[in-house]
Image (cartoon, rainbow over all chains, first blue to last red; front, side, top):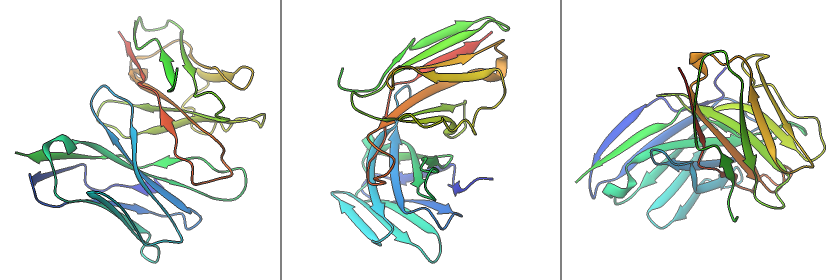
Length: 114
Length: 116
């Protein structure tokens, strides 16, 4: 049972344009969401997060939007740069006491074309 | 060191042999996670340690996999009688405290396992 889903395995975007990466979740008890970026042969690194009490969080070129009613979050990168090319994982955490573990999506490979 | 440290970084082993992968979490981090990523796949949860609580082993794929965490710090993931489908990068991560869901987790560089 995949509780966190990234339905697009890959995405190509022209440099300077907006990249939109999507993530859906099924567990309404998740209360914190994160995005991680992973380059080949490296461990994932934290990018941006959002609490369920917010619907938007912005950090420079990166903005995460959360739609709790739709159980959907998205990461916007504007403007996209070639260095943004990587695999992006969304993650969710939350639940009854004792179940706080991070659940990751399967990732979306972003390619920014110069 | 300042980050999560994993060893070995690369391991090639023969099918049927046992392997041990080691993780040194960030000092002071009470939560430790093991994930693996097979080629073309997402991050698969394996096991989660939190302080002195019983570990959450719900992600371990078979009884050939086990993990322990000694002294609340270093963790070892052991794979017995390795199979070719065990080939993957095994990622360790740590975080401060599960209670505060605002904490991010920090990943090591991974241990790349190839079973031939």
